[in-house]
Image 1 (cartoon, one colour):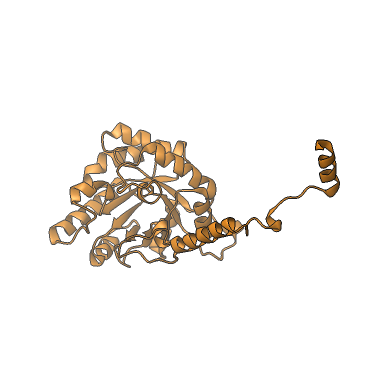
Image 2: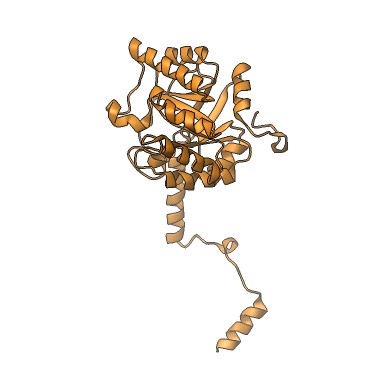
Amino acid sequence: MTASTPLQDRKKITTHTLQEKKNQSQPITMLTAYDYGTALAIDRAGIDIILVGDSLGMVVLGYTTTLPVTMDDMIHHSKAVARGSSYAMLIGDMPFMSYQASVDDAVRNAGRFLQEAGMDAVKLEGGRERLDAIQAILSAGIPVMGHLGLTPQSVHKFGGFRAQGKDAQAARNLLEDALALQQAGCFSIVLETIPARLAKLVSERLEIPTIGIGAGVGCDGQVLVTHDLCGMFDRFTPRFVKKYADFHAEMAHAFEAYKSDVENLAFPEKAHSLEMPEAEWEALLESIE
């Protein structure tokens, strides 16, 4: 699928599509979206997967971590994204404490993403310690994407947003977690902020696709937070982010130009205004004299 493929010729991306891409060594593309307009643009660009990430807590809602994000937040934004996308696979990111407390919670909340929000699958963080929840969600007929490495919901456990899998034992544990998630039935795994060689090794050992973020080119696909990719903020971004645009500066310039035009009566101009027919205007004046 490319951006030049006519819309009418596109087919909905599924777990089967992603597996075929890995089998044929075709890179998988994935971006985040949290609203209708962004989802529409990403979908039209031919991106394979749209993730409604709990990163919305930081890039949309203004929190310093993803931890305050609720299921209701996620459902609200997922609904908007679903209305803007017809072709990409849609994945809802299960927020903090939506699946950790009990298996019943995990299944119920995963089901909300499909039933209420129009998602195609869910993503949740963690390895072997999450197998019970993952297997129960899968038993309910809900596809699951795993997430290993730097898992932002465990930021306090890690002591900050730190790279993972940097020593031999940690790397082995991550590989074993990845194999366990595959065995449980996950259709794909996100690998975040781990050494590139490790990510490549994991990707080669797994039959299911891996999606990297800060994990080098050896993964089967790549994902970025769209707000980082587009330069939506004048702030620090991780070293693995490539900025393809600087929307923050462009927006600032547009807002400044608008302010200047309004203050100098340069906006609105005649082209931006409505007028009554002259006869109606004259009739109005006569009626109020």
